[in-house]
Image (cartoon, rainbow, N blue to C red; front, side, top):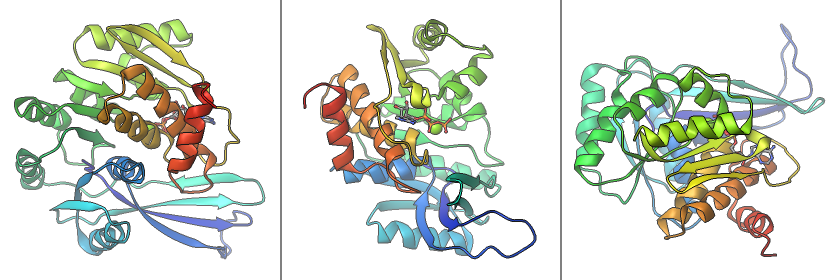
Length: 304
Ligand SMILES: Nc1ncnc2c1ncn2[C@@H]1O[C@H](COP(=O)(O)OP(=O)(O)OP(=O)(O)O)[C@@H](O)[C@H]1O
Ligand SMILES: [Mg+2]
């Protein structure tokens, strides 16, 4: 489920300037937003996914076209507002990436209600709620979806920030939540410096019953998994970092794919580590590629 999808546009320029025109070298469009990214990697790995998303306006139609191009099965919940366009500009001289992310269209009450109604009919083994809440959606929206899915016995995976993360967890009973370290700090209001502090905060979420498994991702510092079995820290896979775009989404998608084929949580978490690194090593906007994920997984699990 992607409440606030994007059309992602990627460019390359030699140098960033103000005032003068910057001629870009390339132009690349892809369908994006948390849930859509998760679905894209999931399908690349051989899984079956359906994307639910809210979209509207001419840009919403363009998003549909991109989803078709990527052969993704999709259910659009129509809205009056225009789907946002997010851009990423790579300055090739410095290797720096600049990312522009609009807040997205305002959602009307009848529209988010229609979204809840649509989810009443969703048939799936897992429901992934990923991405920020667009303007106009109540803070407890993800909480409402969690309650709805509980009633229908569909486990929920949550990846959001700020009010989206807080509202989703408050309902309780999420299967897996994936806050980045920044998101966990914001959620708890704690500084969380040492690995112990981070693991304890994640364990607090488990003990409160808000989520059964908590995977805290910490960029190139790796990730921590907390659940009833205890805590597991894994360092990041050693790779040459090219672009952080989609690292968290690729991590989550790889981890869920492993869960969906019956792997235990610890091993699925390791597959997620491989997924996150695979996204970071692929240049520009590209998400994790399955061959890279498999190869990195063998590397981090010492199979090779
Ligand atoms: N430089 C890196 N090298 C290797 N692996 C990385 C690197 N950066 C990220 N990863 C992997 O990807 C995972 C997810 O990255 P990260 O913690 O940045 O999540 P995120 O959701 O993209 O963050 P945010 O939501 O704050 O943008 C990490 O836990 C790690 O396993
Ligand atoms: Mg993230």
